[in-house]
Amino acid sequence: MRTHGWGGSPPASDEEAVGRIKEATHRCVQELGGATTIAHVASALGVSRQTVYRYFPSTDALLIAAALDGTQDFLARLARRLRTITAPDEALVEAVAYTINQIPGEPYLRLLLDSGSGRSLLRSVTSDTSRAIGRSLLDQTAVDWDASGFGPERRNELIEWTLRIVQSFLLDPGDPLRTSSELREFLRRWLAPGVAALTAGAGDPRVAS
Image (cartoon, rainbow, N blue to C red):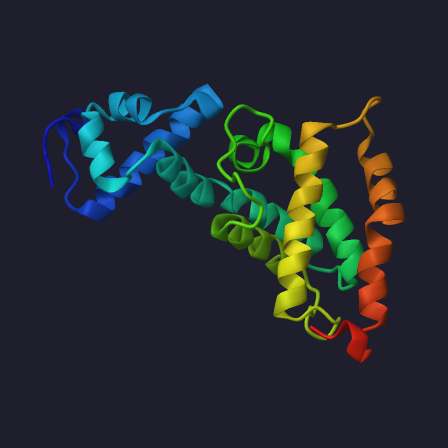
């Protein structure tokens, strides 16, 4: 591990180096958003770009790693909102509506989900990273997904569909912009029925996962 730079206090291990790089990335993203690069992070740490590249092969790899950490507070807040909701349709409505409403104040959510921002870290909603975030979102609910008719395959489809819905609202929020209550009612009319229908058919072999 190189000791040059680091504000005169080099990290004692690779693990500490990675942690400090992520902390510097958080600061840069708060200030620069999607314009953040490895050069910005290296400058904030007082190290060369090559030092950062040792731990992260690209700017996107660095931002994704930082984002997975940086969204934990959002996921914790979401969990608190969803922990008493056991109906799959209402859980999805609340999860999607809350995510859309929170994105303006969550720079990592914007980077991860907003393909219209000029830099979308998740170029495909079917990528492994996308699915991991989607699974985290579903895991915040109190829903028994298997008992509700959503086995692993159906859950993967639901994750993809949910991410596509969120991305579509980011690309075109609507004009006029819906209030939080209007957005929830809109989702209850058009998103919830499909989820509820699969739940109702949980015992039907035609909709088995």
